[in-house]
Image (cartoon, rainbow, N blue to C red; front, side, top):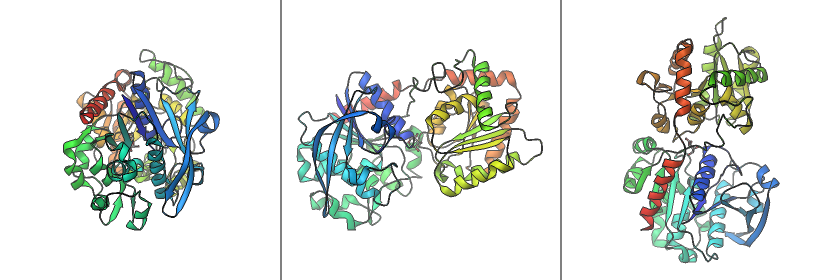
Length: 471
Ligand code: GLC
């Protein structure tokens, strides 16, 4: 099979969140199983791109309304990736350090999708399948099905993977002239709530849909950010496939980013050494349990609750725990969290930014990982936590429900129901009580480390889905 993944992110080339990890790892597994896998993303100014070699394989201009943007397609040469990496370089739109967050994001990703197809129609060996990821690439199935210019691709099946239905790529019909010429009788397909909605278009036009966990698929049918009805309508062609994690990169036995390597057998020593290092780095108390948060600082992740949660948890004189936060995002949340550092010095710290390196050490050195997500399509951090013997404390939603079973039900995590400070405090209290039972803690850590979240199963399910729609 020749599989193309088209996405805004791919680890280790360009990463904001879990989307990158999934695209990078799924592609690697598929490639190792013998498929020809190509990943196509925009050419940003990331370190990986600056440090690696590329050759130009195609160049042209992409039309966007009255503008013409020169672009080229770059193919990765000599790198450690197991798959073929292609970058669409549109300098005027993507020569920037950040991946998202610009006011012309709609223009950027529309051009990216059109440039990709302009190139693909010139390639002899057409893909067996195009796997689109999230709204940034969700207009492709429409363009392939209905734009006259891309008729040569009409038979190529497309699958849309929904990683996050909160972001939908919505814009006004005043930008309709950015589209390639298409069968005008199909304009209705573009419309959702009076706007063009990329996610809705993808749901309607892709031959199949996957969400990144089975429970998330159930949830979006009644809580789908205003698109419940549409998710219901396309249910017949949808499947929830639980993400895996890269168990080679996330492996405490070989991880060079942590202070001391360990396995389930010696996790007691291993975790304690990593905790010492972590506590030293962040001026925390290694004698107290350590709860961490790693992730994007946005309300969808429950990050707005962290400030009050920390204040309430650390207000007592005899502070029972440490809290460490790694992430970036909403400026207000960043500031609130940073402001607490001086007050709770010695038991609380924050690292604003994104550091892959540090994330590894935090998983290795923490006792608990807190995920108070309001929505979580899958969530990978709880699986990384397990792998490093760190006990997840999660709000039961989306993929967290699929992956974290509460201690009381024989699982290795702590679950709570509401994304509220009250519920978080109760869960934290349970964690602190549990922490006192040393033997049980060790057994739980070991069981968590032995859970298997590799991509093996998910890889098969993707393949079945591809085969279904190829037929
Ligand atoms: C998005 C979701 C997250 C998921 C990831 C990978 O970042 O918010 O829950 O794990 O995509 O699919």
